Image 1 (cartoon, one colour):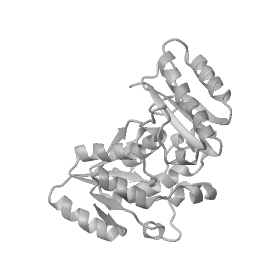
Image 2 (cartoon, helix red, strand yellow):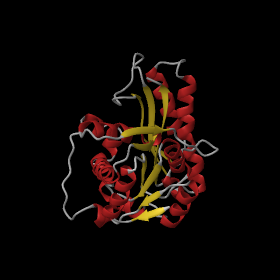
Image 3 (cartoon, one colour):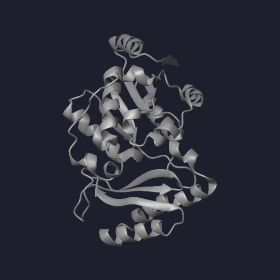
Image 4 (cartoon, rainbow, N blue to C red):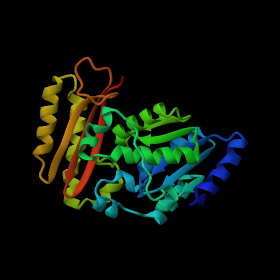
Length: 280
């Protein structure tokens, strides 16, 4: 695996590969890699000649400086995992390689930016699109792979790609879970053993929604799942939404694509999860 820290040298190298008609698959990460990330690398390997993975903790998508500070940084372990997974190229830039001092960025992403995660993390998706736009322009991939766990992020990045007419195909990859059902996340390492047990209520509630979707109407389903989460000690629910999979507006019985999304603080750690209830 080749490692690059400079945009220029990475672009020059990728330009040569493109010139010999190699296809490039790209996985953007903030590091603290786990098996969920590796599943994206594996799919990218199956579908492309060359796989590039970036590890960059992007400061512009954090609205809480403390959250940025405590975000896990494990580049040595990440590098080993990527090598074992057969990744071809690691891009691991410093912040000053990605950003000039006082860059301005604003994309009119529409109302999806302000719903759900957007309401709890204002400005978050501007930071996400800012860095993903930069990474896409540096790597110029044929396909880019993102996890379903960040469902709203996938919608937002899709919108950006359409708006800016970017020549990349986006691929949403299924959520990988621990044996007990907890969605894999870089933030899970912050959970105490007690928190981890309490956190299981999120996937339990989502599974319950999936299993009972045809037995109740949507308001009843939502009420029951919220009750389940609210009765779990140590868990503070931010939202549970049963939403249109394309717009994230509340779903109705006639909605063609339906997803249930949840966010909650478990102890001091904020977790998100989702399940697709109806495929559009």
